Image (cartoon, rainbow, N blue to C red; front, side):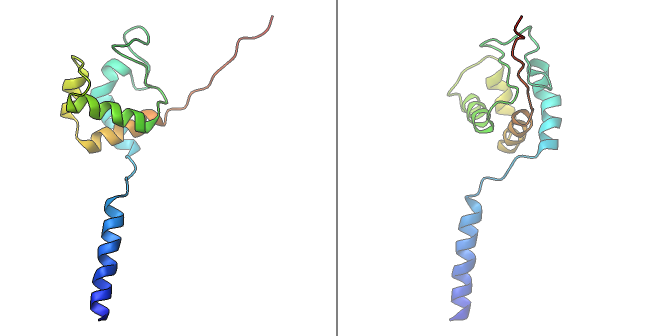
Length: 116
């Protein structure tokens, strides 16, 4: 009887753990961003094409879940983009999580114009 309860307990724990979304790894995200993403988005998430645009947006401090959703949309073909669709297909789900962790953790500050 105790063995069956123990098995049920382990099964419940396993089911709960498998549904937990594990946090991305910041260091691995930085490495992947440097190798793949920084060419267009820069390490700081600022577009390197001369400014924010629909083709190469700034992703500095963007919401992590938003970044994950968009990269998965590029990967699945839900969103079609000449470069991002190909790049996203090369990334594992873990890579996507890690890169999103990196760019979402960049801090920005806003300065209001001074009154004259």
